[in-house]
Length: 212
Ligand SMILES: NC(=O)c1ccc[n+]([C@@H]2O[C@H](COP(=O)([O-])OP(=O)(O)OC[C@H]3O[C@@H](n4cnc5c(N)ncnc54)[C@H](OP(=O)(O)O)[C@@H]3O)[C@@H](O)[C@H]2O)c1
Image (cartoon, rainbow, N blue to C red; front, side, top):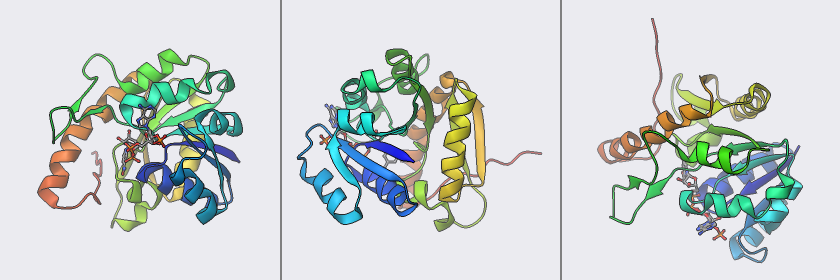
């Protein structure tokens, strides 16, 4: 499948590399097509390099792995190529302006996932994977036992497509939380995630949801 990965940080690099290894035709996008990280990605993996617009145009499916406060600007670069496409949003609305731990720039009655869906109504936004470290995103078997990942979105087919991709990474416990407003829950969970990382001394952990 042709996939556009927006973002050159750890999340974009990890997801992009995994997707290439699974046989997908991946283009990574940055603000500038000659960004050194995007060129290094292409050289290292055999994937393609471009700017955000190129990556959105390339992908049948798009993954947003950009910094939360830049996500809407990044996606806007290719807005006219988004129509009908599934956009998996792994970003978090983190605000480091007052240091660490970060605040959330949006919460309670709204979320970044909803902001992206409102801004780009022709895209089928699915919030997912933002609750785990990049290494766990693409290799849940790094952690022992069953543990959970979530999907939030308005479009059932887009969530199905996302769940298929998650299964191809090895995810078994995938919880469909409901429409895109449920992104509020997974984004606000990141406040706990940051404290857990401090307490556990590693970013490589996850939660398992169990029920009676
Ligand atoms: N790292 C993880 O393990 C992890 C786990 C879960 C969720 N996430 C989320 O995934 C996203 C990416 O995280 P990351 O750690 O990989 O890297 P990051 O440093 O948060 O983001 C890097 C990307 O954001 C873009 N960017 C930065 N400022 C921008 C702006 N003003 N306008 C447009 N784009 C801008 C950069 O563009 P250029 O390439 O042009 O510099 C780069 O592609 C974040 O939202 C993060 O919360 C990360």
